[in-house]
Amino acid sequence: MPEGAIAEPVGSGADDPPTTPGGELVADAARLRQRAVFLRELAEARALLARSTPWHGRTAGLRRRLRQST
Image (cartoon, rainbow, N blue to C red; front, side):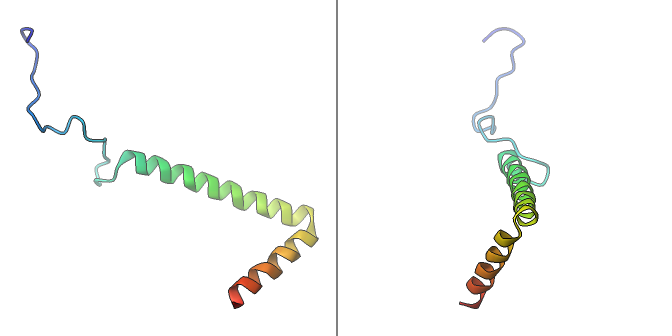
């Protein structure tokens, strides 16, 4: 080992995934952020589709009510 190098103790967690102060995995936080963006864009696309083609919005509403009733 070169002089001045610091040896990491075995089991120090160097290979563990990074976490936030709350203990949540960073990868999970990033995934949740991406999911939130996706769901927001999906809602915008559905709203745009409902405005641009009113018949599509009515049909989707009928299907949604039918699914909820069964």
